[in-house]
Image (tube, rainbow, N blue to C red; front, side, top):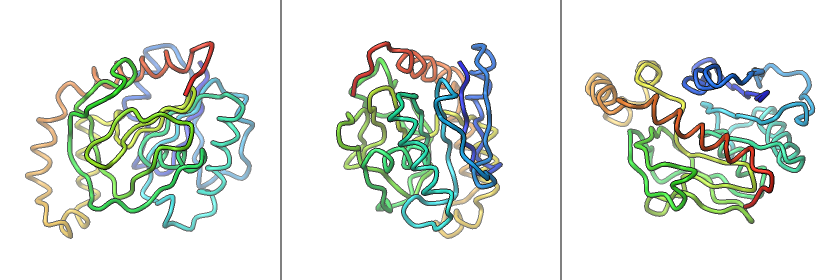
Length: 226
C-alpha cells in the first residue's frame, strides 16, 4: 500500500508504524502538515495515517487544523481509509461529525482496555497521554470505552484511536523528558514515571504490529461497513 502519513511535530513521529510498514512492504509518503502549502488529492493514496500533536482540535487556532479536518472528510468520503491516532483520532471524529472537548483529567499511562471488537482492536495494554477526548461520530460504531470516555471508533473503513499504539519505551521516554514542565504541574515525578513506563512498555512492538495488521485488514475490506 501507499500510505499517506500526516505528521504534526517532530516529537510525534509514526514510531512503530514506520517499522511495521517497512516490514510489511508498504510505502509511506510523509507530509509535515504545518508546513504544507497545498493539500494533495487524497485519492492518490491507498490509506491515510494521521498522528498525534501538541495542538488541540477544539482549542488551538492554527489554520492547518481546519484544513486537515476538511482533508480527512474528503478522504473518507472518497473511501480512502484512515487511521487517526490521538489528535489524529480527534480530527477524524470532528471530520465525521463528532465533537472534541477537554477531558476531565489528563490521562497518562499504559492501560488494558475492554473492547467490543477484539478482532479489530485487541485489549492492549495501550499507552495514553491526552488532555482532550472525542465523541463517536454519527454512523460510526464505538470500539473501546473506559468509564465514560470513548477511546476508539470505526466508521466504514476508517478507525479513530484515543491511544498510542505507535509508541514504545524509547518514544515514551522522549515524551517524558520533553514534558517535564507539564508533569511537574501534575505533581508527577518524571524519573519514577520513566521507570514505570519502561517496564510497562514490554511487548509494545508485538502488540503494535498485531494492531496494525488488523487495521490493514479492515482497510482492505471490499465492502466497508460502519
